[in-house]
Structure formats: C-alpha cells, structure tokens
Length: 261
Image (tube, rainbow, N blue to C red):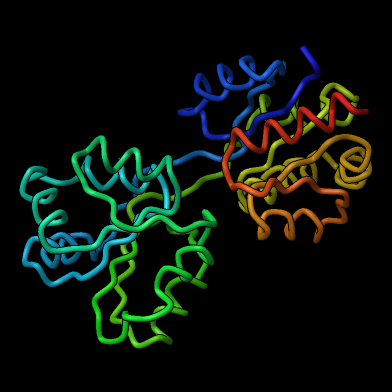
C-alpha cells in the first residue's frame, strides 16, 4: 500500500469507500465527518404533484442521495417514473447520480461536462425562460443554481429531501488527533460542510492551528472549487483538486501525491 488516506464520507458509504481505496493501493482510515438524514420538505407533495400532472419541464437531481430519498418517499413509484420519462427532461449532476436514476427506471437526458452546480447551469444557457424547473437537493445546497435559473426567467421550485449533520464523538476526536500526530498521509474532502465539520472538531479540541499546519505537510484533496476555497479560507494551501469531480479521481490524485512524497 502506498499510504494512509483519511476518508470522511457519511457512514453509508464506508464499505464502498474502503473497497475503492484498497483497489487503488491505499490504506483507508474511515471516520465520518458528515452524516445524511431524511428531510421532510413542506413542498414535497407539490413537487410530486407537478411531475405527475405534467407541469414540470425539467427535474434536476444534484446527488445520489437526492435520488434515493426522493424515491423512498414516493407512494406511486411507477407512476412517478412514467411521468418523469414522458413529460420531463431529467438532469443529473454526474454519472453516479445518473446511474442511480437509471437504476430506478428514470431516463436521464442531461449530464453536465463539469459535475457541479456551475456545470448544470451550462446545460441551461438558453431555453429555461418561463419553464418550470425542479431542483431536488439537500438543505445545504449552494444558492447559485437556483438564483441563476431564476435570473434566466425560469420558475424554479427547490425541494429538499435530505439534510446534512455533523457527527460528534470520540471517533471524530480521535481521528483529528491521529491527523495531528502524523497518522495519515492524505485527507479527502468531498464537500464544503465536511471541511467545516472537520475544522470545528479540531477547534473543539483546541488544536485548530496545529491541524492546519499539519495539513500543509500532507496531501490534501478536495472535490470541486468551492470545497477547495473553503480549505483555503482556513489557511490550507497546496490543495489538490482533480479535473473530474469524482471520488475515485480524488483518491487517484491523492495517491499520486502521497507516493511522490
């Protein structure tokens, strides 16, 4: 194995993350710094009603979690899928989200070249004026996507189907101590909230400055420019941001940096 990479994804992805890291020749230390929980949006029934009634022109899913939590709440899954396929253009933020939709029987018509909110906006450069656009996401979604679509004249409905929480306990505190004590060779940050949660845990222990200094000595990777900017706001430099915003590409980039050091 090339080195130890700290993975902080939600516990529901633990096995998948471990197997992927091992297949790439990395030891993985898995400790969740973010958890995913169902969120009951008051607008959910309205969203389903618009889809079933053929009133939605575009339905955009920004994550695998969004697909799973949506489908878990649908009473008439077959009717919902049929309505999406017959009446809407369905957009997925990336290939994993597209795969989750396709496994549910939903036809995906739009996938951006860049797997981000900015990439999704590139898909809607024209043709959304006076169109009904549904955005299915978490409660922590960046406002950029919705604000820009509204600015282009779309009628946008944002439906939150899950929320993100910060896990706090000895597992998380021990992880930060291990990072500080040179117990990992790299860290994989997959979201802005993950960065904040990690740093807050270090702050709770009174070791934030030491942890930031330590991050300057190891390989630190981020999926997406917003995540990278958040790390920089804490004083972390030399951040690795892979060209493709996929977890596998992040691990590959970290492996290259770790093996080179």
